[in-house]
Figure (cartoon, rainbow, N blue to C red):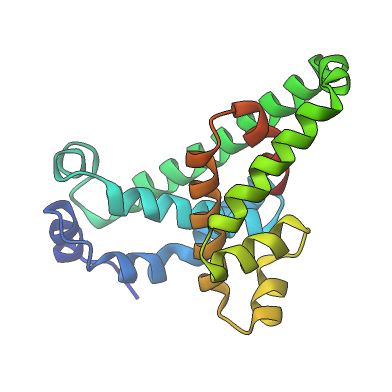
Amino acid sequence: MKITQADINTFRKGDNSPLSDIYECFALELNFLCNRYLRDIDASQDAVMDVFHKLIDMSVEDRIKKLPENPEGFKLWLFSVTKNYCLDILKHIQVVKNFEISHQQELKMLPEVERHWDKELLNHVIEKLNPSEKAAFTLHQEGYSHQEIAEQLQISYNTVRNQVFSAKNKIKKYIGSTLIVIIILIPYL
């Protein structure tokens, strides 16, 4: 499959319908690119989907300003954006690791009551998720891969990805403490 000038022009004008063709055309190569950086198949697939979620949310003004008009330029731009997204993920992971290392003593010294309260808050938020998100996120949190979750719940891989993505976003919105989000969610990215 090849992306045409018409596909790009349609997308630049605000119509998301060409994105499925664009995804099918580039997904495999983008997954390979992400895996070179992230060294994790699930994280790579998540990164590619995150990039496409950002494309969906991109305003028409940004599409016109940022997106190249020709197919080859668009491909180069898409690969550059994806690479930069992977580098941002790696930087974020390193920031979290540095934080955990530099604040190891403080984290150990958190009163047990606070840690219990944080866990209770997280459990409360997870209970508010819809049943399908809750099931997928709970298994994800236990360390199962998206493929294993899909097999256990007998749903598609993409459904699992979307449910876990949605659950993480809802949890981040409910929980105001960055520390909780860093400690609880980041190790599973």
